[in-house]
Length: 78
Image (tube, rainbow, N blue to C red; front, side, top):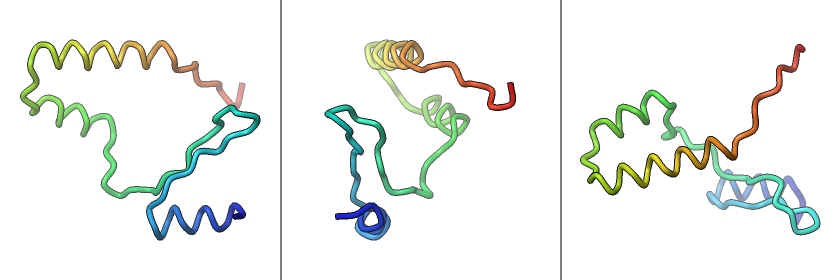
């Protein structure tokens, strides 16, 4: 299957693919979703959610771990 076929299947059949090179995952092809949200909408949704104290701790821990994994953005104009 070529790349164009993968894109068509992602778009039309809502399939997802992981792009791997030498056993290392480089990227994910996933369907674009108009139902996605931005960070402000996510914050509003979480504010309205009725989470237990344990769930809030797990969420906070996951966010902290995710922040540690992220690399700083590079300024393309620098």
